[in-house]
Length: 215
Ligand code: E4P
Image (tube, rainbow, N blue to C red; front, side, top):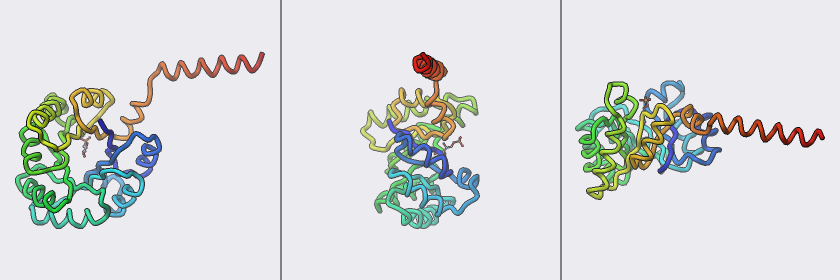
């Protein structure tokens, strides 16, 4: 299982990359808009920090226009993976791009059927949105588990990214469901590093050590 960072903030990416636990980065138009910076420049900077798949999303909804946008983004760096929304036009774009060697990540996936279609179109990655399904009253992780089971059963090579992760328990559940990747916000990554007993234990070690020095 790999962890990607779900952000377009280069400071967060630098911090997380220094931990040595991040294998890639995912962005989306909302995350890019939050930074208020030039899209291509942000993607370029991310490729300089993390040597792994960097998802950058198209904003067109017609296959030809998606392919044109994707080709421009793919020129930024070979690690750029094109995020394509789960639409019939998106599936057309995925099969054209993958046949030209441009990797894709099908986003806004909310059912195992959508994930199956993305895989059959040849996508390198599919991203079921766990948190948004939970918000709508569904068990989001079931889509991840069903998708992993179907891909394994039928030998489909597409990797499953558990996306829209909201808290550390989602990451544990994604790992147990067999997701190849969980893409996590920086806040969740830092929450994963912490445990109150680690803090209590470290304080005791430090206090005991200080007492020894003062003898
Ligand atoms: C990942 O690829 C998605 O862009 C992201 O996980 C969406 O998360 P959200 O539902 O918290 O916006």
